[in-house]
Length: 295
Image (cartoon, rainbow, N blue to C red; front, side):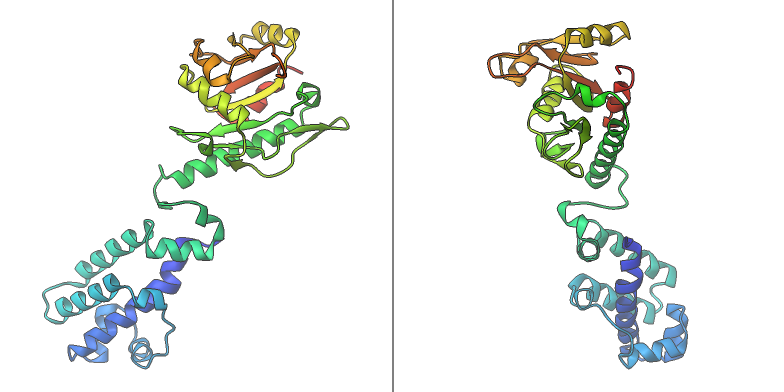
């Protein structure tokens, strides 16, 4: 785990300080004056001057970085800019470079898992990266609950179960995290093939998205084996269940019903289609927790 702040400290700041020190020296400032402006020791300035500080080539070659160093050196040398003013300009550039730019790219290179996200800003509380990781984490927690829930294995359909959760405002199945390969009953044991991923569930994710289009505000879904007694049990404990036509495409069939406020959707099957119950919930973790009321 490496924070973007470490990239700033280890890669950006030594490079930028050395550039700024060079430009200030070009304005005939002494090492002592440069040290005072930068808030560092004269020996550090000397190391910059003699190339004894490692510099990042990508930061060094960025025209915006070089341009800012030149502008700040001129302003500081001519007393047209204070150290505080220079600091503000540097901070603004750093924040800009952290948003899907140079520092974000260096961060992604240091943390390969970040490369799957485009346009991310690790400081943005509403970023797609944060939303995706929260959804994936919720599915993990939910799967952990299912694995330790005695009796869940008996609710797994022949086609397998999947537990899914979408990010806010999903546009399609690529915005829905689920279990790759589905959850199966293997010799009486709940078996999970792998870690949650996005875009791996066509069926249950499709049902969730269709339910949302039909008025549901659910963010997660879990499919279970259909049994009239299960539907009755759901209704007994206060679930609002809605039936749809299992012989039609789920998107079309669910569009024909009112899913607003539904806690569960179900169909009784069709030609070549296994009957299923779909629990709907605000999160994957919550959907899995609801199973404990059924076993």
